[in-house]
Length: 188
Length: 188
DNA sequence: TCAAACTTTCAGAAATTCCTGAAAATTGAG
DNA sequence: CTCAATTTTCAGGAATTTCTGAAAGTTTGA
Image (cartoon, rainbow over all chains, first blue to last red; front, side, top):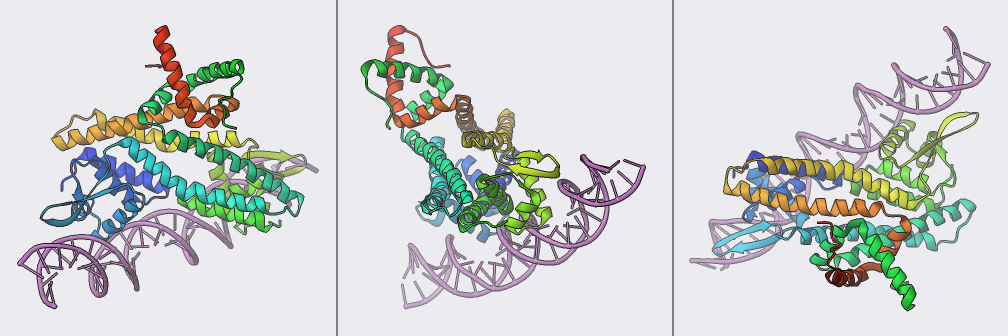
């Protein structure tokens, strides 16, 4: 398995970024390699390409599986498992967002809800709860919006994104419209 | 400096989340403490509250400063520095997004641009470049959209978010409208 | 059922990151 | 300028995370 300098720098970059992200270097590199690979790779090929031990690759792949970032397939007459990444980069992005939400956002919201239920025992606690509540509302708003958006089809999403801040004008327009018709487009 | 159980669990949660984030535990805890604190704290108060060494707090605060997540102030007749977090949670969110973009997204885009400039030496390289280009386009689209959105005022942003996926209908509406008038709302 | 082909587990070595105390540097009042 | 108050730096010990090789586990074809 010979990796070209082009692929090597890509793989190395993902390794470094990985550690900045809480994901470990090995996992980042394995993912990067699979992402640019023309065909699915088995664990031995990965180990050889990246000069990792076979067992390290096994653990890395397990981690990637837990993030739902790799596909697994078999070839007839070959008992080894072959790994690849999904083709659709949008789908990858959504998977990543879902997993991060599940692992990071949900536990935080749970903790905040819990804290907000407590009866404040002092002024300091009352203030702390107030701050937590502000944080809660922000996270809640941003993440539900994000998941709303995620469920739109890619075409609409791309149109929305390309529209950029011009969406502001559209919103202003529909607002004045709803004033006329008396119907509100908000969900509140 | 006595922290109540309420604040303690908040602080502990941020410590743990921190490590999942690539930010270290200490830094996460210091930030959490400042976030819920009623008044600005000096380094000694932080060190005592969290039972960290004074020097560790100093390093943590430096890190938070580099993320522009803390404000620094002085009180007359007191030479010590007092730290706090900005009041506006939206502003905090934007700062965080900006910094992450600068630290993680920009370098990745630069690397990808570089890789895409290379002349492919094989089919495998051609494929790798194709994949990198897909990744590039996705990141570019999402981040420019994100920064567009960031520059909207908070009210509009909140309206947009509350609208959720219903924005789809608004978009469809303006599209049919633009077909009638012959003007395109896209920026392409 | 057996055995070869693969994969996973896991104890501990290696590497990295974190944290501390001591010392150096900086700051500002007098 | 001097000195005390405060902050920063940094070498190295502590803790944590990563990685490996050996062994155990699993699967499948004959």
